[in-house]
Length: 336
Ligand code: AVJ
Figure 1: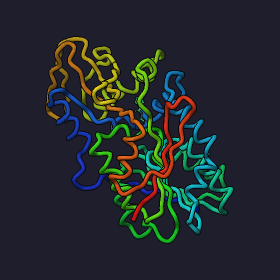
Figure 2: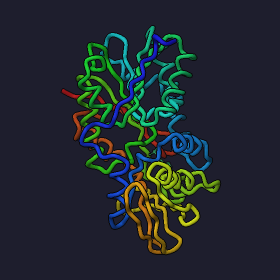
Figure 3: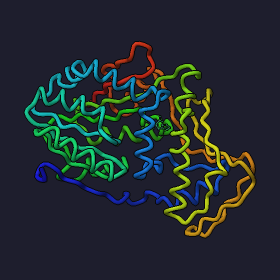
Figure 4: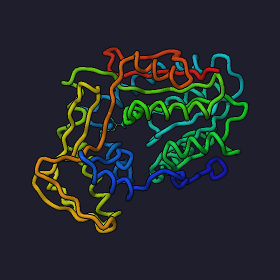
């Protein structure tokens, strides 16, 4: 199996801040904030996996339904004018469960497939790569353990990763795009465009704007898994930076911000207290009710998705929706 797997671990690209720097800056700001990319350590990635199984978290189920129903229609459009075997790059592959649907569809149309999953959690990446190789003998994997920016830089420039003649599909599923501020999402897709040739495609999963009665429970589940996922950020600061956060002093909450069309997740301090963080040589003061803003999860309408595509060198070829129009899967085509 070894000759079918290459595993590359990247340090963050130069100029990118470290966890320590981001925690120092975020907890010294008003309001306090932390980046959602730090949710995904080994435990956090497993907790996210658990979130995907929650009854309230409609996103994963709905996207899987669309991919199951439409995988052939999607690949018909991707295939279009391209000749040669496609390669498949996935940003934020996680357990690659939904991607199996596309891998299987590709392997019905071509003899072999080169799959390049990108994920920030190398434990999850390694496990899912080994499972996929076992299940699909005609699959070859180049796994990239890196954040998106670093991985896209390597995919655009490294001789052994750069696109050759073969057509490429990049998948960016699960509405992970929603974690980025609008300008940052344009920067990210511009970097994706730089990895591709004219005619190549991006499959973008994007959660849609909808009633708050459905949105908010997806981020405030009754079992408390999302709360654990959010609080794990503090566990991580304790472990990696010598923090002294007590989880019982913080409460998870997610609210829908109508003005910005996004879910915001917070960790709210239950009392006024000080938290030392040894390795940063700092002590953070929390007022009672003060919060750390830990995530934005933007929700889209179809026009915004089209605008995003057009602004970043793509055309929006087609969108697929579930019956209730809760979620969208969008195929972007790289322009000249
Ligand atoms: C992986 C970013 C799409 O925003 O819905 C799930 C992460 N946060 N529950 C999302 C998340 C809280 C998720 N994304």
